[in-house]
Image (tube, rainbow, N blue to C red):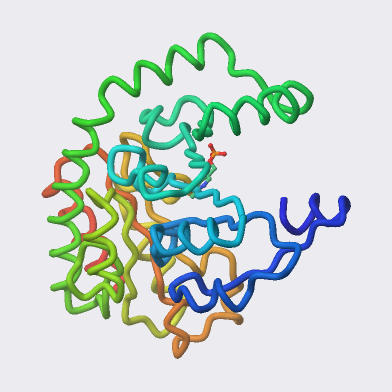
Length: 275
Ligand SMILES: *Cc1c(COP(=O)(O)O)cnc(C)c1O
């Protein structure tokens, strides 16, 4: 959207490191109309201080919008913190069963009314009745699924953190997380997505690890019932892999609704196969 479509309408985008509020202050231009956030983001979970950004944006007359997919509306309430528009993929936690796609945009009646009458009626897409029914069904069990996933994830995260093959984990509610305090302040919970860095010399070791998992599938997306894994190096060639770059040894794990010990056993046997 920011790179391919908006420039055709004369809209330009400035990207910043959103972990520091000063970076927002410095990047605001006379024609800035929107600050678009994603907190936590979906690989390294960097946070933006939502109250501080909302306050700054209000004082400059700028609209704020957040992708709130990681937390869901149950674990983070951006509008209560002053953000104008909250966007949520319903494909992930709200649907919860990896069988439908959808999205939700929330905001004031005035803002949503304007978007509905113009952008939505002209270029938006309507959700099919069957998909809407699946989303409503998913929504009914969202609180219990999130509670279960949070517990399982904490257990799996602690196990990974203690594993000798794991250099570090990245998870907003882990005390080692760089923005742990902020995460605790503005999020009521952390979900099933975490990342970890393994000690590896070759890309093939990481490939063997992922392919040896019997129950955890290698796939993008998350938020459904089944656990998934995605290594950062999936998009590189063997020759591009550089073990001295920490990012290259990063894997993202999504914890679904399975039993924690069942997932740990699967990870354990894959570690033993790969190394
Ligand atoms: C998956 C994802 C989306 C897009 O969701 P779809 O419903 O699959 O289009 C948007 N934001 C984040 C952070 C995501 O992880």
